[in-house]
Image (tube, rainbow, N blue to C red):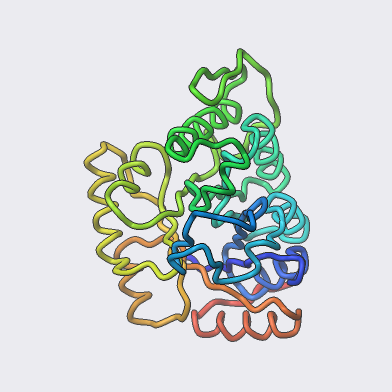
Length: 286
């Protein structure tokens, strides 16, 4: 089981190119960032944590672009995985997004993990002309179409939301046929059936309850769908507790992510060093 850091990037926080090397040097294995293109000021959609239109954190409206952020992180690191928790692919053009992700995977030496979400903010999605009731189908088509572009010499796709004829597109992703695609969503049967059909694993939501039971359910649905091996499972945690981590390791959790204070480089570095010590991680040697 690996350990990583998720940074809620914003224009007020540390630049990813500043924080990512601290993450790598402290001994962590992964660095994740989120995505929101914008937040409509008037919204009908309720936030999953607050239960209404209020936001738990003003960084939602200040989030940095994830691909620019991870490109900066890739340039100053060599080992850690670079992921999104989570990206919203349906808010971008799929051909352009496929090029961006393939380029990042190529330049980073195959270190990209694509965490995706269905999108809780229906008002944000609507501004991108995403029909709320079809966003799951749209996401599935995006993943399939991008995978074709990443893995086939002459790719084509015909769907409800994505259509293009035989095309050349390089670079291909280092990871074939695609980087790992993980879905950040509530741990329920509906979402797990979607994951078992169309993705490679699950990212928990913040404050997810009864993770152990959810992991067991996901693995059962995964096996029932005829998928080989085990799904990747990324857990968002708040405080490391040895007994809990031991249980997750036994269950097959792949990666555990923790947040980080990023108001100053000194505070972030001290926090990462302390957290790495609690997790038994070895600092990188120069």
